[in-house]
Image (tube, rainbow, N blue to C red; front, side, top):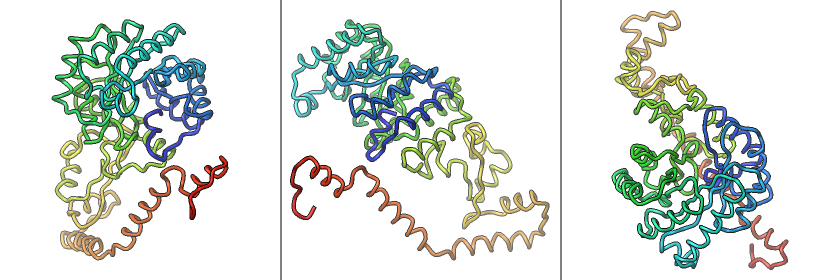
Length: 387
């Protein structure tokens, strides 16, 4: 609800945050980041609403290493405060305009302040993996000494690989003082799930995810992918009620306005759909031939699509389910007829849909230009001519 809502153009009302948080808590999610209270009055209300809803999950709020941010989190009544600050020289020089010493001082000061107010403290750095490792070690160990219970390493622009993650975490485990380890990995090159799995193999206890993989730029590690990979590939019991996975995915799709890609792993509309004759024939005979898990496991259903690549097995299976037994000639005629219908369809509707979707995405992306300049006008400034 924090990084997911930072998807360009996405806004969750306080009540929507509570709806998502309640569903995830009921599913067995242990920790949730409800947002950054200092962002706005509504954000503050949303975080406070979630924090005081009596959910089983531990509710966290995020804060820059700035006193007013941390105070806002504490005022919301959250269980945990996540204090973040950048640590790479690139960020320090061009964004924060702070020295390494100033960053360390601010981080330690706010960790101590939050800890003194009786909340669990997580310390996070942005751009961890591109920062000087010796400085990273000094900064994190200082915050652990200051009281940080958990420390998070962030691949802010998604450049790490599983091999790199394993090497880095070996170094971290050797260098850092005792604290719970966590990772926050972005998906700019589509590696977030694989990198999270590599981190878990190295003993990381708290991976960060977002439902449907939404988030800044290309998003974060998708919640559904990581959970189902652990359950189905690794055979690890996550404690998550996966039968509601599709439910929460559709909920976030609706409230975020971000459509689930049709080919999205686990929750995409095509994840359990089959058209190819060879694949469909295999699934009809044994689902394990072309499906890594049963769709019913996550609250979904299998679908057979009839089109250009349809084979006779799929058609026969459907007819028999309705008590119809065709001859071989009739079956072949039906298959050929389906292919002809599929290949004769014009693409005007398809093209129109894509154009409509692209136009909608342009209009969905936050405040429009006219709205922006109207806000500027109300502030007493004169917008440029023609705006």
